[in-house]
Image 1 (cartoon, one colour):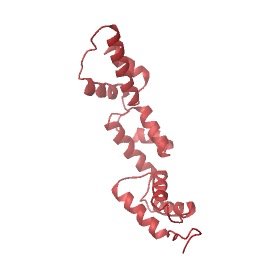
Image 2: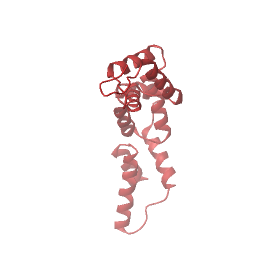
Image 3: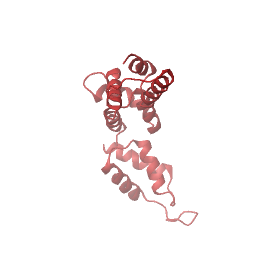
Image 4: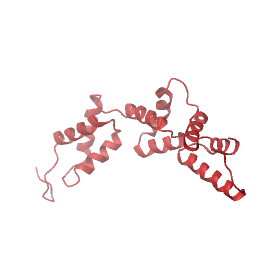
Length: 166
């Protein structure tokens, strides 16, 4: 079958094969997979309905799961030293923010101590080095450390406690 532009249309079999290829490498969320499939077949006629039909079939077969993707993502981000704000933003961008609370609750045996996680990241980066220098240098260094922790996604209160009290 050929589209109006003269490009051959994508078949559901081709979409399924491409999706399976992507899923074989790592877990994907349905939104992410939708975007990747459209990108892969951008020069060929590919309707949203056809892609959604393939994604629904993969979900029904248990090969695609937003819950499993959310769980995998939260474990990965916490182990990399990211805080709750950065994790939420990643989930929002992936279109799976609805799974965040359940993923955080089931990813680990105990609730996450975000202060301890931030302290670990802070210690790894700064090795317990004290903030030294004159007033301006200390102020710049504190601001730099605060920005680092906030970029990692930790709350301002946690960042202040570590930088100013630590």
